[in-house]
Image (cartoon, rainbow, N blue to C red; front, side, top):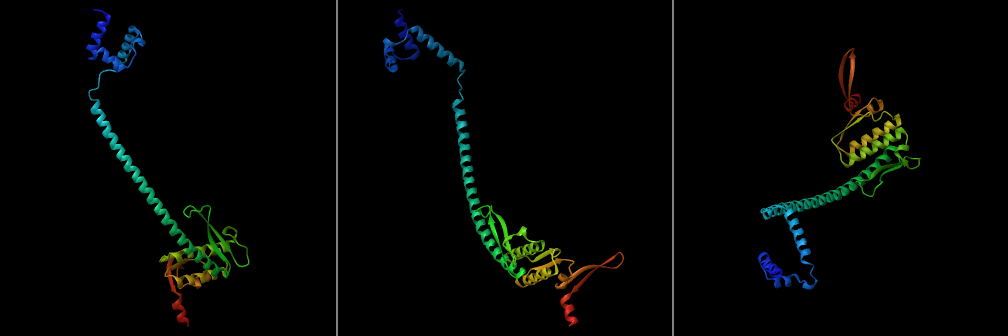
Length: 258
């Protein structure tokens, strides 16, 4: 059998097509084709590469379906997670917006009360609160600026100890006026004050009791403060080693004296 006939039969047997049809499909000029030996060597190399791939995976389609299902499931979960993140960020933004509005409203009220109480305590002067270090109220710091009568405007840290105490009490009570509590306990707050400032402190307590329903419990050893209270509670030791609780209603005592 001639080589050309053998190749034609081989094409028909292996590829199940006519040589002329194959030539048309390949769109190759027969005159420019490489030698048959070179083509055979290239075919052999490609077959070795194909054989090196191993056996055909008959479950490839099923495995592909399983992987596709898993991919679709993860894609849905990813979409749900992204939607949840979007919703969460929207909620955070809404809370931050409401928080800023509430904070600024409370800040303005406390600031007004603080200025009024400061002037009441010092018999004049002015004080205010300033948000610093950030334009966002939620991230801003707080600076206390105060100017007692006859002094320059300064920060709280530049005042004397007594002035710092009175200013701090004005700020505490300013917060109480904005959001009153039923009970307020003050422990030795009058300790650093002289008699004149203790009198101012007691005047401020009288003002607070008129403006709020808060009961103030004062822990003190100062005679001026105790003299201005409505009721005293104390512990005495009439006998050595024997403690006794004492309660005195000063208003009733004043009525009895009168």
